Image (cartoon, rainbow, N blue to C red; front, side, top):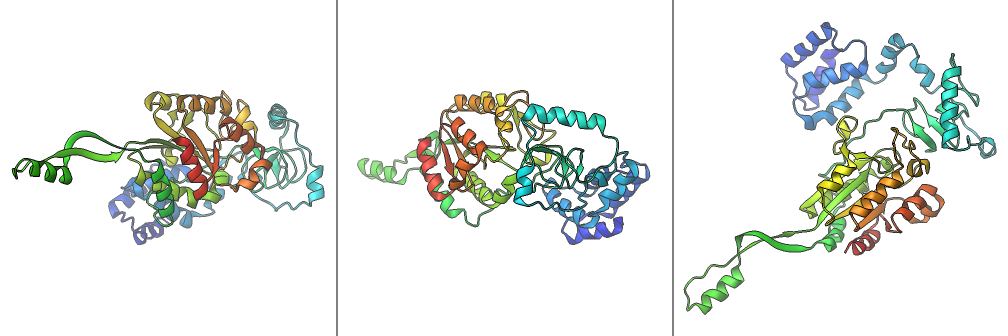
Length: 391
């Protein structure tokens, strides 16, 4: 098994050595990874990958080789069978049937009902409208339908209606090297530029040198000036994962263009909405977070703040403590975004969703109100309008 992935990695340009393979085999012999596929993944990556920039390539090769084995391992070692949370059948409901399914009646009621289900349920369940399971209309589980629920064990979103998600996900970083299609975005971003000359005089000013030499009876008088550079400072906050997967390409183009155009660019990632922390690397998003308060202390009010996201989520994620789909936030997202806007008065939100849909999505309307209508579509015209509001 390991010999095959070893050669797959070599064919993929990873260049692992025989010594590294033997190290992996020795670690497995000592039981370092146990019977967990996750533990084996991290062990194999540690032993076989020398360059962190190759992690994404390793992930793709690892997934291609070991696809489907996760279930086989977990069924052997977990008390709660993984196939409880696997899709048994796609649930297809008519519009009339969906209309009959009522929401739980609020965030607190939803969380309280989930606690009761966890205490009472002691067996496997498929279908139905109450217990935690698969392919039903219960607000708890996977691969079913409910207008307001907690998604548990499902791979990816289907109806995009979950109020909370109990699946840990990893998101790849936006690729800052993307160049295709970024030309027009770069041209639009240049309107935000504010050039200044600061620092040591280390650049030859040819025109002034000629003028001063001529005025000095032909004696050479060299004139130097500081290098001309873009003095605009930008904080770029990018929504990643979930419904934003539909907009990865345009966000990569914007990210790539921004890194080219702005000398003073700081970027951070978030998921759905702003809370008490953000992160720089999606591979370490659970381990290495940066306090939002620390960001406001480190970067001054002269920075321009730009959010990029579709603002499409449950309204609970904005207005409730604990509303985040991924963790328990002590304070609502609305509180945190107001703090950021207080620290950075020049701020906009760029939304990749078509503008005609905004009024039909409650969370977009909420985010737009919090931004004081400084939300613009992520189009060239919307980018132009947004940049004008930042001046």
